[in-house]
Length: 169
Image (tube, rainbow, N blue to C red; front, side):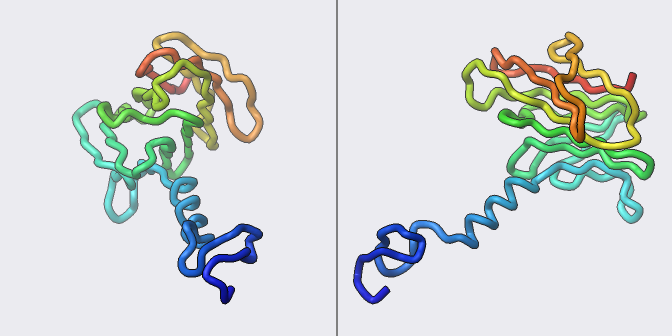
């Protein structure tokens, strides 16, 4: 547009010069937040590794500290199975690690109430080859609401943090 202020092709009034948002930038940021994940695997070159996280090992467990900047997706990837966990509204606590047992039979983490208000949220699990799962929420078993492409667990978030355990049956 040649005027100092006018109607742009996006059907909004804009000043000449850089706009307050840019399509490519917003698409890129959206892609980052939609794709950011912690991936824990046994890499053929590097051995046991956690991409997007800091990994600490002891004789019984792997302690995974998310550092992907989002803290809502975790993948356990092995040659014979894969298991993905996604939190719809809340996230993994940055004060407590995601703990994977040495035999890869269980995943335990602290769910952080990011809005700090009581609400319901969904925990989604997808994958193949891992087998039947059991989810414990603050020590109580939770029955999934749906099981299509992803298994959906609806959780009642009523405190600042909750303990979640996912394990093979």
